[in-house]
Length: 354
Image 1 (cartoon, one colour):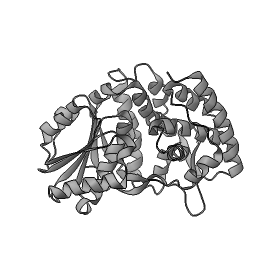
Image 2 (tube, rainbow, N blue to C red):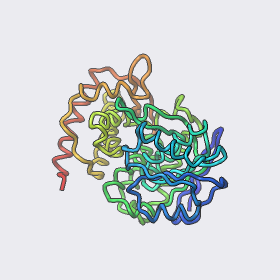
Image 3 (cartoon, rainbow, N blue to C red):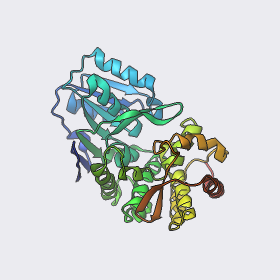
């Protein structure tokens, strides 16, 4: 078992290990449990047994739950049972469900306690840590939300054994990203055969990936500087999600986006890490994308949360573990997109679906 401390104004622990759903506890007497409707029933029952929630709310799976309509419906359920100000919201499930649960906790009665129980790899190494909560709009991803750190996070690695292989590999994108921007030791471990549910490298790799994000958000909770580096690959990733109407899973979009960011890094004079990001894509085997042009994704990239009044900014790499935030000329963006398209089309041909 590993414990990582997230510091800052509102510190909290993140615990990584086996069997945690059967041992957890919270001090609040009244709890609302929020989980996706496709979560294995055994996980829900384990948490219900430990916490005896006054209400359990099932929401649509994945990004289908991150809408204003679902958000409003959950708030109404909490109000109907009169969850008090000294109650708590517990988010159980993948990153989308915990993002929604956190935003509910941040806004219900102007803020109640929040706890996170991620059950996917993506949720553990990214969404559950850092206090970012929110929902999507048709115009883009995560455009409505709040910073609301949890009181504690429990990452029960036993839950990962229920994931389809493609979902596990999707989640690995964020761990690989943490290797690129901060801890290079993660790169070979993520691609190793032992990094799998029940594998010898699982717990420490998950914990070390979480430690990267914990360190960053401790120093910069509200993304005034360094935290933006965690968005390496996400500018194009969120655009791909938007243009496909969330038709591509987040972790796969991030993998595609990391390769684009690596190509931009080379074009701007940085080290050539594109072979590494392409190797990850081959390992991940993401779903093929529809035919897209630069003009298809550009409007979505322009709405990226790193954009300011002067336009969009990208997280790039001077070299491994040396990220920086910069603007890139549109001619460079277009040329890199053409190279990216060539690489991605070749990848899809090498990894046919089915």
